[in-house]
Length: 114
Length: 112
Image 1 (tube, rainbow over the protein chains, first blue to last red):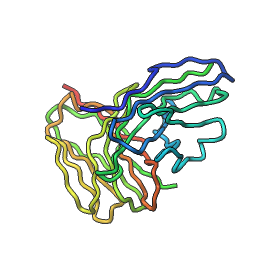
Image 2 (cartoon, each protein chain N blue to C red):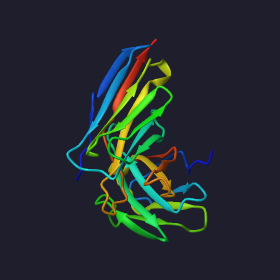
Image 3 (tube, rainbow over the protein chains, first blue to last red):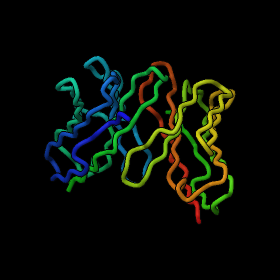
Image 4 (tube, rainbow over the protein chains, first blue to last red):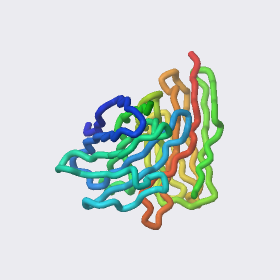
């Protein structure tokens, strides 16, 4: 069964460094999302992406964050200058909208900022 | 910001018992999804409900969407230790919103 994949599974970085989290959405999906989950808290929406542009973003998704679909398969989340509070699980999701708004999640990248 | 309130927060029962967990809101949703999440992993989709009053069954799991599309329930019959996990509801408000709003989840433990 097709699934969303994410790399790396765990990323450790120093505060102030840039990180890029990578996702390969399900191949026939056109809508892509990033969410984050701080330890012990709810899953929170960051951004959605369709037709090579951001379609919606939350207030969490500030100027330090950016997303890109550099080729036909990858979808990336970049954090330019990481902060301690960016430490979280980051989940990529994708959807084909054929079943209304059903989003399929990847296994996540655990980001630890030291 | 729409809130999804899930109850109970924690539930521990014996194998073979039945249980129901709830997902409530004051907002109307265009669709609602139930996920199950294991520690350190991503949410795994169980079901999407769209129509008010809709009932969907997935083996021993029965999902219902409220008539007014503001709430949902998950009923598990004859719970098994393999059902142990965090059950999350998530919904879209409609109006073009893309991002799912998640509840805090119900931590379910089924004891053998």
